[in-house]
Length: 378
Image 1 (cartoon, rainbow, N blue to C red):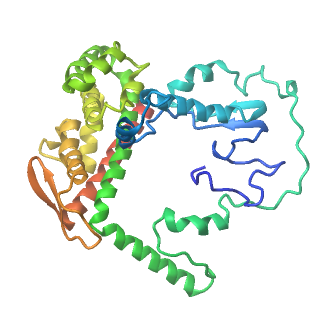
Image 2 (image 1 turned 90 degrees about the vertical axis):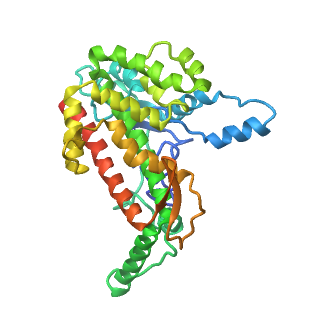
Image 3 (image 1 turned 45 degrees about the horizontal axis):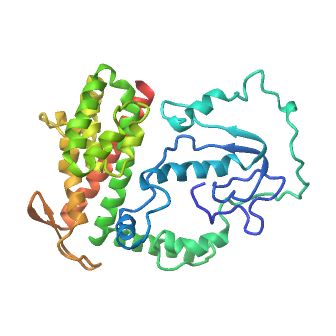
């Protein structure tokens, strides 16, 4: 469930015996069930540490970290799923919406080997399940306990105040209108454009990685050239990291491309460049991108033929970098934020910020539609 570790069906007994419990993996720690179903098999290891922490530890810690940072994401990934898989007392069921991306390569081998519940060989009578105590089932459960909502929504949604009101009178609707209006006005403040751009482009980074992964099998005989370009034109452009990544990724293929994409040194701009190459290598993908650029970015007169990297870099990345290193400290009353784009000072006034918000929404549609197209049509 999306609510996290504090979201329960029932505050007093959030996993009552005799009921089907919907739990996050974190919530399930220390508990066991006769039958456990685990989904989320599309996941891949993601970087979980902050670069700032590395700088702090290198400067102040007296001994190196117990786990190498480039391996921590794998350790954390399998620790998490060990917790999930080991909750089952008698039967563990792995389930997912099977497609080109799911299950991910980290589960594919084991998923393909295990017996399907739909097969003739699968017989529940072969199992001896732990007994479950009888309980008086309640008529209904709320997936989010009311007390949790009142305790956390002010922080979660940045609302200044939480109230209880009768929904049948005008007070409730009036309060909702006031809170929504306040939230909208705060979102429009210039100071929030930094957070909007950083959060949204961080999500774009994940979408771009997913697009590279799903399009990689389509490279065919172009794979060798792109692998050479990765080594010569991407990895070699940073002397500090080139040798380390070169030694680690002697061969780059479908089995380790996700690992490379999740490397700390394989930055967002490098990922965008690689996605652009993948699209350019396939005429069908290139034509689809032109269509999406034309539909969502309103490009025409040949501009829709732009390469993904060139367009994305000009529209998004340069402003992301500028906002990450603004020249003035913005406040809630800021009318202008000063940033540097292509060596020139740029004023992020309300007009430019509104334009950026629109572009972010449009690029989100481009990335999502491209993924759906590859997944469903190719």
